[in-house]
Length: 305
View 1 (cartoon, helix red, strand yellow):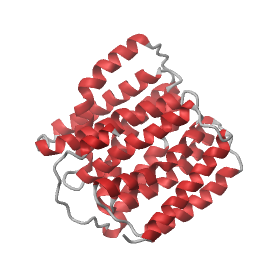
View 2 (tube, helix red, strand yellow):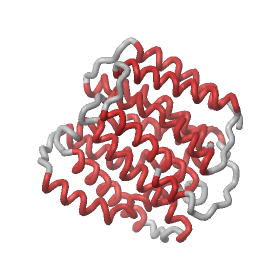
View 3 (tube, rainbow, N blue to C red):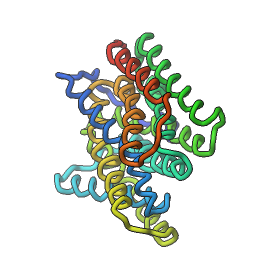
View 4 (cartoon, one colour):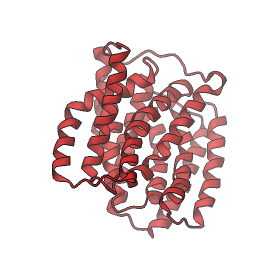
C-alpha cells in the first residue's frame, strides 16, 4: 500500500479513452496472461537450483539488462520527470514486491494453490484502478467480477482446509503490490509505449537489484540444472519483460478493468502447467472453478462501463 500512496502524489496525465481496434488490444493482454501463467511453474523450477532471494534478484538484473540494452540500442530518451513517481510504483510492485512475495510463498505452497489465490488479482486491480484512474465500470461488470473472485476464494478455502497459511499471507500481500503496479503501469502505457514502461522501471530498480543479486548469490547455494536455468531465464525474459510489454499495451488499449478480468483465466492456465510441467495433482473442484471463471470473463468483456 506504500507504493499506491506514492502513486497518488504523481501529477495527473491527460489521456484519451482506450479503444480496442480490431481486438488487437485484447489479444495483447491475453498474450500477457499466457506469459504470466507460466511464472509460477518457472519459479518452482528456478527454486530447484537457486535460493529465493537469489532467484528474484538475478531475474530482475537479467530483465533490466535486456530492457536497458533495448533502450540504449533504440536511443530512447529518459521519461519526463513527472513520470518517474509512477515508474517507481511499477518497479516496487511488479519488479520487486510481487516476485519476492510469491517466490517466498512457493517455498511452501504448490503452484496450483498459489495460482488460485492470485486469481483474486483482477478484482484487486479493478478496485485500485477505480480509485487511482477514476474508471467507473458498469454494475454488471462488478457483479461478474465479484462472482469470479468469489469462485476463486471458495476454491482457495476448500484447498487449504479453511485455514490461512504463511504462504497465503505472502500471496495476499503480493496481490496488493502487484495491483498497484499494474494500475500505474496501465496508466503510463497510455502516454508511452508499454515496453518502455517496464523497461524504465527495471532500469530504475537496477541500483537495488544488482547489489542484492551479488549478496544473495554469495550467501545462498546455487545448483545449476536444466530446470533451474530454464526457470530463471523464463521469469527474467518472459514474465518480467516480454509478458509485461504486451500486458501494458493491452491495458492501455482496452482499459485496466477489462484487461484485469482477462487474468481470471491465468490461474486456470497455471493449473494446466502445474500438471504438465510439475506433475501436480488437481482436485475435482478445479474444473468447476474453471467453468465459473470462464463465464465471468465472458460477462465482464461484454459489460460496458
